[in-house]
Image 1 (cartoon, rainbow, N blue to C red):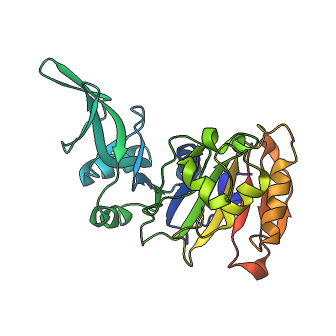
Image 2 (tube, rainbow, N blue to C red; image 1 turned 90 degrees about the vertical axis):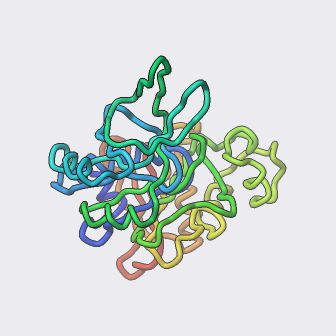
Image 3 (cartoon, rainbow, N blue to C red; image 1 turned 60 degrees about the vertical axis):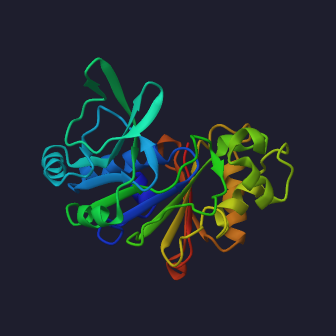
Length: 281
């Protein structure tokens, strides 16, 4: 079963998808991209914050339309954003045109593109018209598995149809201080000391709260993606988290376990306004 099926993503209706939360967002986005392209969909990947630059992938600098169209014709997808250059140990924004190279040489100095920054809202609206699906990394976590958003996070564009909240279960049993992005916010939200360990109840609370992963979701469709479910010592940890979320009326039924260790929990057709909760190894 594909991730698209597990997340119940309908490419006809879910045309702008924002991914928020902890580590694993970029990997999920490119897995979805691969599946969508295999279905013949044209996909643009971008961010409203920052995301890692991968030089092997097609890249449309500043969302330049000619390059976007060229990539969509050739590979079915492109990554669009403003390159953030690193020179002499410092990051700089680049507004130059074109180019897929990970290194830009200027005189005797070599500048590397290390990250991609978000595009203006006006550019996102233009790009949306060029593709079938717009996938947006709308949050940052410094590759840590769990987070509670700051006041200005996440940055979910108004055009978003569906929000996916990601949490890595490698956070379980570790201190808030060691495993959470901005641990002081997580500590305050949970009412726990920053040196206390993250529990299954903590993960469920963050995933289901409008001050946690559901922040700024509003009336949009919402899913929770549980990543790294094979990391906890107890293999039933993900199942118990799903049950806790069910009790919060965030889902109501389960799909059977599938190949590659992927398992999902889906909502009943009669509860179409309730979020869905997913787990993945």
